[in-house]
Image: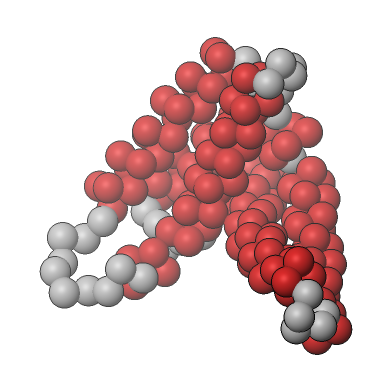
Length: 175
């Protein structure tokens, strides 16, 4: 696990929280209670503070290199607690099968919109501005779908690893 995985997890959870807020603002039912959101926020702050404690105080290093480095045991424990809370309170969003399904849906959306954008770019007559304007829109949506698919893939891998480690710890204790 590294910083890229943690960033992906953060973006997925943030995007879900924003969608949930928008859903409730439009009169829909919230998936996450306010108390659970507060707990998630507090656990995320613990994760962030442990990551800040890990961060080396070296200057002149690229922004990417620290993200690729492995995390400390304290950071991994904080992330594991955050992931356990997510899976427990929202299994329909954050269990490994749910994340896998969401990842596959984003991959399908990426493929469909990229193909539609490419077809429109090659087939649309240049004098029809409406069809010509649709192609960049489809490609923009494809880009968004690709980014979210990568984030969901990394998050799914992180959750899968956390659950495997937890299962190994439980089996070691029961032996």
